[in-house]
Image 1 (cartoon, rainbow, N blue to C red):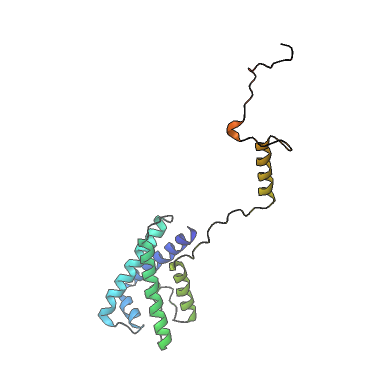
Image 2 (spheres, rainbow, N blue to C red):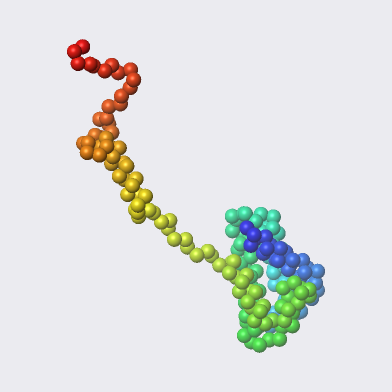
Length: 180
């Protein structure tokens, strides 16, 4: 839950920074070398909308089990990561990664790639959990089994009496005395 609040804060801040510098976003995305000019406006709008949706959802409903905001978060994280990795691999000089628009700018470096990798860690499905362990015995289990056998047999050295044949004694039963 804490991680969702942190990620919600970061992604909402990213969206707010990008909205505040929306006029610069097509130029920032063009630096990645995949889109240019006016065609960069569409991915900018999609990224900002995705960041805003998942950021606000994570802040408003951090315990939500809904998958929609997680898928949106995953999509946004994958797009930013792919943009960064391909530009870094091609050696493109990206002066501002654009994560917060023109605010808190960082040049594209291994540190930005590390940040993107960390966001992808949360987007990854959780590792499968091992099945719950059952008791394999031990001293406590052996003592419990011994007590159960004693209760069935009426005590040490007495023959076992099945539970449905046991006779319950009550105080109202008369006790026959010899000679009566």
